[in-house]
Image (tube, rainbow, N blue to C red; front, side, top):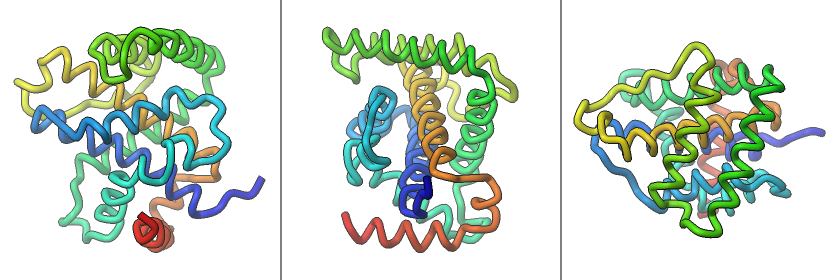
Length: 207
């Protein structure tokens, strides 16, 4: 099936949205709750009928589109290198995950189990963050190379923040799965930046 650059860009924006949220929590101890929720919801949309619907709609990934637009449009010294590094690391880990059928099964079954708990807890409840974080530690965190999150020690040592960060890394890797399914590759990030930038601007104009 042929996928469009629009679909690839939306999925890649999902990766960058999660990466930016991780960077904000690690360095400031907080991030926009509505954006966090949009990213986490993507983990539980198992049978979405379009790329946009994985994030609810285009607005659900609007923050990521803005981040991707800034990162792709800036000169090297104007980019947030931490955000870019997290995004690239998520894409690399997704490739490792996709090559491990047993772990993929663990992840799928684990997310389905967590999804059942949403009958009793809201998506933004500490218990849900803890469960997603635990699944991440048991599965993706065992793959190499690990994603090393940099930031303020006071924020990183806080258990709630640590759980949010792992949950968002999970969401970013889910978006990376979607991006690869849409035909995305690291070569396109290196050599097709202008195409992503142009598509990003078209999508932002729709919001």
